[in-house]
Image 1 (cartoon, rainbow, N blue to C red):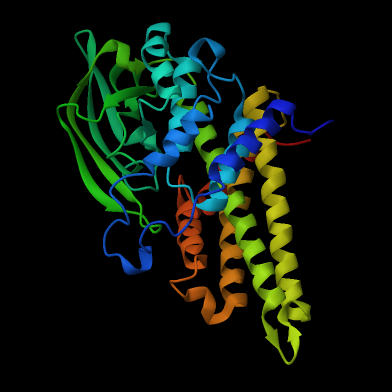
Image 2: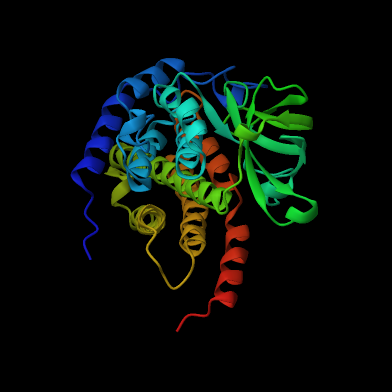
Length: 380
């Protein structure tokens, strides 16, 4: 099997490196020194540069001004975003637009996708559930009323909700449709939608969405089977890509520091205890990378496997959540007191890593999910 990236995928990664080259991880106040959010909104200038480089339309078809690429290309771009702690809704926006394209109707696609690809319309996804520890699709109920729908429930920790024009909300059906999930495209200004400010460990502004009989039209709901499962898998895999890029940058920072910091007349990188810890974290990153590309390839290709695609996504998230935590903890340890200095960006990477570790569920939740899949699909 040939796992070499295609020319188009490599070009997307190269374009992303160019756009993110000037991004400073410490461009906003430190979350360690800020009681509230570090900024009211995301980096609009960076958003415009991403749109100008056609990176917001990466997954969209040519008919909607896109490049027609796949989840692997998106993850390559997200990896670069993670290296610089890019403060943009690139993952949520891209995944939501791709879900509309793959599962929505033609009218929805024509209405939304061209503007989303140009960055004029900002999309995000409510994917954490009521508490962050339960399936997001169970946190909101949807019921038909006339030609439209009414939504009730709460979704927590919705990223970039204050900046988005539309929030994609998974909701479960009651009555005769019990067990099914739909995706509602809810305008941020919809009547009955209330936002309550929350702040992530990274210092970014999140929102609790409270939906009280929010009415949406029939053309604002995606009813296709499998839409939420596909969107959720892409969000989780993209989160793994962000964690990989972050971890790789942190290990590089650690290598540079330990190569210069001397004790007893020698760089501390030459000490066996330091080298062994750094080597262990390198192994973590390579495992994170291998499992990420396996999951992204399953999503992109639709290829069958011994387990459903959710199994590969679970393995990738387990490695990403535990691996990125170990990488930043080791980096803090090897940097000594310098790693906690708020004038040095390492503490920001630590805060973002904790957010990514827990986003869309911690490793333990995916270990349980993987166990359920193995029980239902025994190998061999």
